[in-house]
Amino acid sequence: MVLEISGIAVSLGEGEGVLPGKAAAILGVLPESIESLRVIRRSIDARRRRPPCFIYVVEVSLPDETSWTEKPFKGVTVRPIQESRGQSFSKVQLKSGVRPVVIGCGPAGLFAALTLAESGMPPLLLERGKGVAQRVSDVNRFWEEGRLNPESHVHFGEGGAGTFSDGKLTSRVKNPLTAGVKNILVELGAPADILTDARPHIGTDRLRAVVVRLREKLVELGAEIRFGARVSDFLMERNRIIGVVCNGHEEIRTDHLILAIGQSADDTYQKLHERGVRLEPKPFAMGLRVEHPQELINEIQYGKWHRHPELPPADYFLTARIEDMNRSVYSFCMCPGGQIIGCSASAGGVVTNGMSASRRDGSYANSAVVVNVRVDDFGAAPLAGLTFRRQWEDQAYICGGGNYSAPAQRLADFLKDATGGVVGPTTFRPGVRAASLREILPGFVAEALKKGFRLFEQKMPGFASTEAHLIGVETRTSSPVRITRGPDGQSVTVAGLYPCGEGSGYAGGIISSALDGIRAARQIV
Image (cartoon, rainbow, N blue to C red; front, top):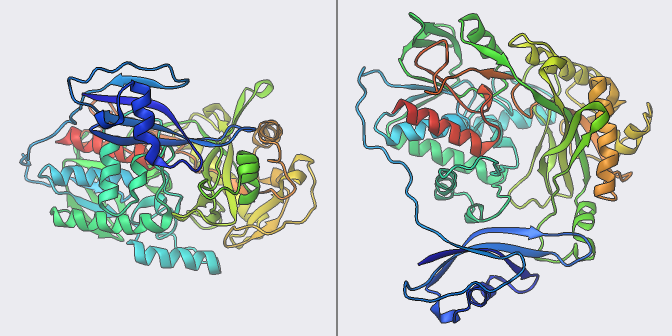
């Protein structure tokens, strides 16, 4: 029989070797009765004023004839489990003989392409940006010299925006395929602990190598991948997709098109709108990046145990409800031991994001802190959200000095509405310039952030330290546009067009985007 035990606490210094004994005590059996034990999940309980500990969920196998009784341990639950099998597909034949096309080489596009290829329908994958190696060179040039390549940057290219990120794999989506996605990533070189950590991440350094191996796997399965292939138009006939135009001149025929464009291809959204693909505005969130010394965050979260060698760099997730404004303020994409990066998507705009390497061993911690933006804040036109966020990115560019440096301000000065002040050391590249950050935010966002930061200080005393800096602007939390689709996954106005991933307004982050890409491909299969 197989049992799942949740809530086993392991103190600092004990190690995972104590798990079989603890599991046996919980079940009231002898340790030698346990045939196997597998860690399903590991998290940290770091509530203040008591020693941090690790909390485990494990899967235990016992002989079928074993009699067990759950002992009353606080916070521990036991339940029998049965092995589940994922949906599988046999190889299929293309009815039309025309291969499917996938647009976009981020997580949604890559996993859609993998699903199609493994089902016997190897697709053509079109990516307007470059492969990882060339893309890294272009991004480093931007960070070092402020020279932006509009077709090769943090958003466009192999791996999508996640290639320059912390590589977080957390997701609120409850989907049995999540484990399969993680297993594929491990097979391609991701660390095995992403299968068990409660807040798994890969890190930008390791993720880049994983993405290249995924491309190689796709090619082995018969897929074709073209970089520098910008889809400039969509070909339709009787409200059905029949092909695309690549780079303004090459027509490529297909009757199954997966659209996994990410959220930064404003020109593609515009073309879809012109061609009658139904789009609708969608709420999103915007705000600033906050940066602290990592040692400070460790001390706040772990207390006097903050230097214990078993503890990883501390993180946090904070939320606040601003009742008098009917707004929410929350941290987003927190990067322990990371850096804040410039990720401008087009000329004349400043956009920020966070990035960490796999070891998360940098001296600073950063996170986006954002406020919800409703559709009525920017208008009901399908593309109004794009115009709204671009307005504030352009303003940030101006306030940063017009060279892709970002406007920055000490958190303490922001709370006091100070207009002057100096900026201490930050990790942001290409660079920062002291500014009043109220100038780069809608009034309601600035006011909600001020109130939210004060509430965060109550939850995490020391958060509003004089060492904390704010850098702006953060606008790419999610897409402000949704490409409307029906229950069959196809556009409600154009048959054969399958929108998916973050850019279509149905996912956010690596895992949910990959799952949405798989869903689109399976609907085609």
